[in-house]
Image (cartoon, rainbow over all chains, first blue to last red; front, side, top):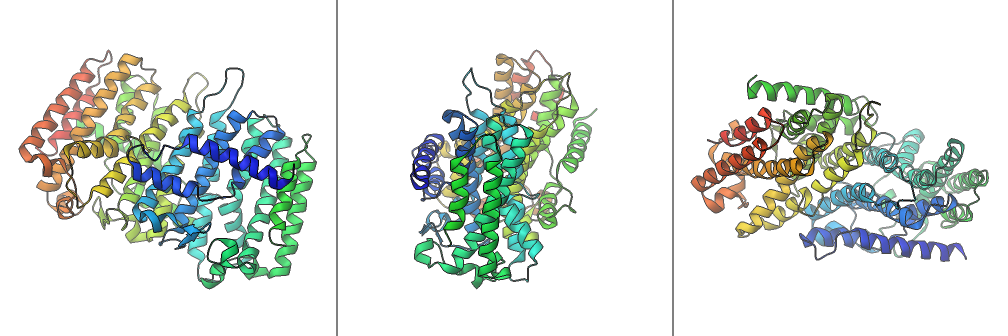
Length: 296
Length: 296
C-alpha cells in the first residue's frame, strides 16, 4: 500500500463514519444540519482523523472505537474552519475550492453550524458504546480533546492571538505560539488520543506527543510555504492572502529557504520519535514525510 | 430562608466556583479570557445552575460535585447568549444592562469567547475530581449536557428555527418548538443533571423531567410577557425588541391574558411533579412560583 492509497482508504472510512454520526439533512431543523454537512463534506483531507487512526492502529485499537473518536476530532477541526472563515474573523469566501459556509447559508447559520459541530463532537465521544470485552476511558479522551480545543496553548487561544496580531509586526515567539496553539494542539491531541485508546505507557505517550508537536509544526510551516508558492487554483483558497493582510507566517518572518530547512528538520525529528516507539508505524512515518513533501 | 435569600446565596456560590473554574484574565492570551469573564460576570441570575443545585440538594449531592457541574451549565448558557447577541443573529447591543460582548471586545473575540465557554464547560466536567468515597458518572452528565446543547430538540436547533422564523408568520407548533428547544432543553437538563448526580431512579427522573419541561416553558412565556410589559430600564435589555423585529413570541400569538393563564397552569403542574417526588424540594417549588411571579 502506498501512502496515497492509505490516506484515501482511511479518509473514506472517516467519511463513512462522519455520515453515520451526524444528523441527516432531513432531521429537524433541516437547515442547520445541511450547513453542518456542507462544511463537513467539503473535500477535507481528513489529516487529523487519519492521525488518530494511524496512531490507534500502531497500538492495536479496534476500528469501531477508533473511527468515531477520529470523526469527533474532525468535527472540531471543521467547526474551527467555519468560524475562522467568518467575515469578523479571516473573512474567507473560499475553502477547499468551494464557497465557505457563511457564503452559502448566511452568517447566523454558519456560527450555529460551528457551535453544533463542536457540541456534537463531545456528544459522540460520550455516547460511544464500548463492546463488553473492550475498555475505553472516554473521560480521558474528552479531557484531551477539550484541552486541545480550548484557550490555553490550544486552538481558540491560537486563533485569538492570530486575529489580534493582524497588521502588526509579530515576533518569532508569538508566531511559534500561534502555530503550536492554533494547529499543533489538535494535531498532537489526535495522535495522543489514538495512543491513549491503545493503552500507551508514559514513555510511549511522550514519544507520540513529540511526534505530534514536530509533525504539526512542520505541517503548518509547509502550509505557509504553500500559500506563497501555490496559485489559488491549486490551493482551493485565495492564495497569497496571508501576505495581503500582513498575516504572521513563518515564511514572512524567516524566508522560504529557512522555512523549508526547518520543516525538514522537524519532520526528521518526528520520524525519529516514532522509530523509537516499541510499536513501528509505517503510516505515521510516511505522513510526516508527506507533510513536508507537499511544498518541496 | 426566603427564596430571595436562597437565590442570592446559591448564586454567589456559583459565582465563586465560576471564578475558580475559568482561566484568570492574566492567563495568556489575556484578551480572550477577559472577554469570557466579561460576559460570565455580567450579573446573570444564575437560574440554570441554581436549578442544578436545587435538584442536587434534594438528592443529597455534595456541594463540591454539584457546583462545578452547575457552573459548566452556566458556561453553556452564557456562550449561547454571547452568540445570540451577535450582529448576524439577534444583533443586541445590551444584555443584562451592559454592552454585549461583541460591543466591548469586537465580533471576532465574542465568537471565540462563546466557543471557549462551550469548550471549557465540557473540560470542567471531564476534569472534575471525585472524592474516593463518592461516585459520579461523568459520561452520563456530559451526554445529558451535550444533547441539551445540540441541534435536535435542543439549544442550537431552537436558535436556528428562531432565526429562520424572523419576519415570517409563525405557527403555534413552531413557537412551541422554539421555546422547548432554545430554552427548555437546557433548563430540563439542569434539574435532570442534579437528580442524576444524586442517583435518582427512573420514576424520580421522569418527575424531575416533567418539572423541567413545565417550569422551563412557564419561564419562557413569562420572559415574553416581560418583554411586552417592562421598560428597557427594568429589563436591562432593549424592551419591545421582539415585537419590533416581528419575532415569534407566545404573547404575540396568544395574547397577554392567555399567556398569563398558560404560565400559571404550567407552574402549577411543575410544582405538582416536585410534590410527587419522595424527596421534597422547597427550593424547586419556590423557583417555579418565582418564574411566573416575575410577570404578574
